[in-house]
Amino acid sequence: HHLCKSKMADQQQLPQQRGQNQLRVRLIPGKSRLAIDVGNVISEERDTDDCIAVSKDLAERQSQARATRKCAESCRMLVQLFGKENTFILSKCRHRVQLATWQFLNNPVLGDDRRSFLEISGILPRNIVFCSKRSGGSAPVRLIPLLDGERNGPRTASGSVGKGSVAATLGLTHLIDDRIDCLLSFFWEGHVWAEMEKSALQLTKRKTKKRMSKRAEKQLDKSSSSFGLIHFGPELGLPSVEAIETFTVKAGKEASAMGVASFSENWTSCHGWDQVLLAFGLQPTVAEKGDSITSAGEARDAGET
Image 1: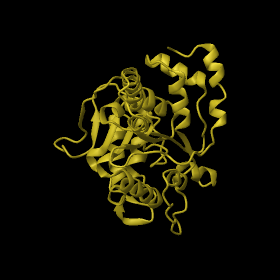
Image 2: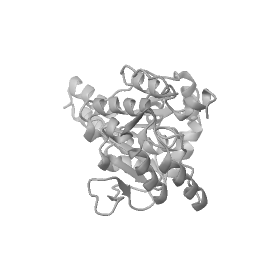
Image 3: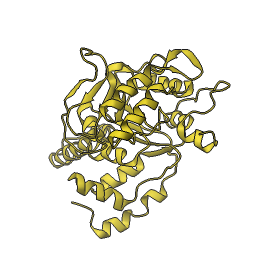
Image 4: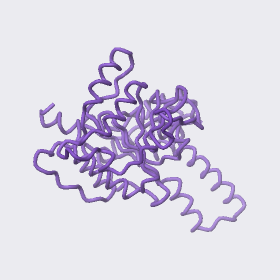
């Protein structure tokens, strides 16, 4: 059921009780699947392409932009942690900006004129996925080639669907994103909440029949709770319980107390790539001279953009 007011009151302080940088993010090697946003995460350009005029201007800037070597190296470490087949780029933008983003990912990175972001990070071109909305739609989503005849190249989601629907289709468990609405969609409309509901149902049935051992119960719980919501950038903070419920009502989901608690407990705030790597238990890369700015958020904090 949707949270009643008494339950909401009990959960109201939950976001404030969580640390701003919860270590460590839980994952299951070989099974967990990571998605990384582009706008304001890999790229300094934000995906504010809600009108044609803005989309055209953004596409021109994006196609000429370059990621930092620090960002590319950090993503390479995440690819090594999750595996090439389990690491994705998931970006919301219109078709024009999708093409520009593909060009951006193939541009030489800052600090290395010979190699592109894709060459350094090792992310597979086929694992670059675009969608047209931040939330909404339903799974499964049909993914079609962005480039004519390139079946192993980047893909785009057919129809008006958000990141949650794509996540449900691909079985994604972790997301690095600067937008709260995308993280909400990823959790409530994606693979994570569907698996949690399924696991809770299995647990209830098996407990009723007294067939589940303590070990099996622990494994089931671990499998359903090994996910991560990484909020990236300078403007960090958990959404309020009211904001969560507003989203779930709009999405037609049930914001149970268990769901709200799981959402909050697995939320990690990171200002830049060093904090992301630390959250995954990885040692940050050493920035080379001239490559000290690792994200758009850090650049703004330093007063350089």
